[in-house]
Image (cartoon, rainbow over all chains, first blue to last red; front, side, top):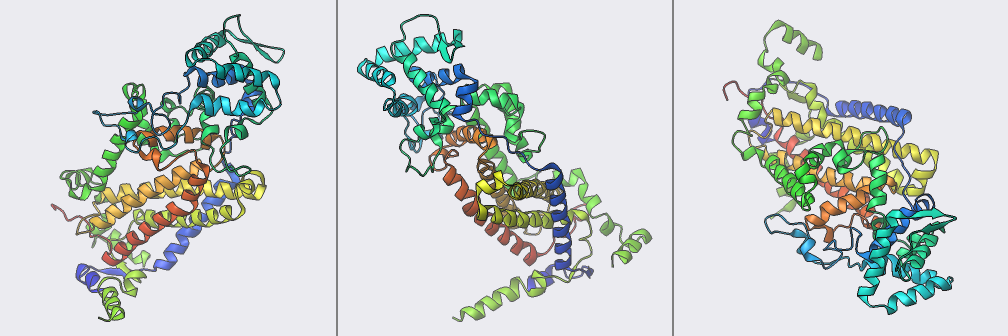
Length: 324
Length: 197
């Protein structure tokens, strides 16, 4: 034993022990349990939500998603840093907005990145989309927004007939043709590739735009059906009847409080609460009450060390003799 | 200055072979709660082992083949056992006030290991390349962005997430666990709370 250990354990009775044997036994037991659970229960692997699936099964939702980027109604349109320059929209607590500290590091122009650039690819082989895109680009920003906003609103009354999205008549300019171009792109299974227009094709290394495209209504609708929304403890849930990240229950808990869940600064509030809790636990050895009174008051230690406290009693001596 | 001599002195004073691989233990170390730590370590070993094989064959293998899916399941359940053992270890160490007698460093390193494990778990969920990853990525980005971390860590950048999960974070976690183990073996198990202490 080292000098430090000898000094600490001076006067303490020792018992025989085999660290390697104990380690091997525990490793063996855990391995067997893991193999049994994996063999019986397998693991969750719910397929991704792709543009092709949404375009074919929910064409109106797909169209609404595409138009939301033009009309400024998407969640990303005025998100703020690190994507857009809407710094006032960054989450803040007591006037402090950490999201602003590094600025816009993943710059996105939602109308251009999510609709216009993909449609420029479509316009190579679709003259109708090419003409619509030309008309749209030639219009003033105000006109573009008016067309897109009007079409976005009327999509609530849309029907899908003979493979086309039908809406009541109105002044939507070229936007319906552009939206139809996006829908065709999705149906063809080419949406994700077209969104990554600045990727090092054929290598796809970063799926930020593809993942952001459906992050609003479409993803929320799927998550809702699988009990994965924040207010459904989604942060710690897993698809199906599998245990998820249950160790994040304390984190998910705060999202069950309506005032926090509905706050525009909810993520920052929860993040700061969890950071504070982590720091409290980290410094527990130096925090009065938490470092002594509480663990002693709960008295679990008496049960853990019951043999030590009752050493000398016949029953304990017998257990110790059997344990070797 | 003889570096070898200094190293020898360090280990003689802090971690002899009997400390590192003990053949005897204080009599009070006599409860199954002492097995939570080694259980977490065993599950971590399984995670590294199954993760190594999954990294070797790649995502298509563990999504699309029967053997690959089975290794994916082994990895998934190892995570569950790992966190069960880790949380149990943390809770029982709190309830026995195990930071006493100068063992605060061990406690803090354990908490850092827990934090590193949570981040490794998060990047693991993001690396699954299935619906869960897709949903968690767009949700986690809001938490990361709100805290200002989004500029450094993009939950939707699969390449960054995967490399963090299979190399960077496991190395950090393993290093913290090793230092944690050094202090445990060097300082030994803390004595029971004395009555009236």
